[in-house]
Length: 27
Image (tube, rainbow, N blue to C red):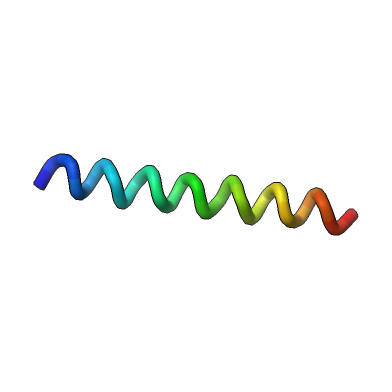
């Protein structure tokens, strides 16, 4: 249970990071 929550949080953080990188690459 704890691991699943941590995994979901990490996935969300990774998604935000990837989104940021894509935004910077477009400039």
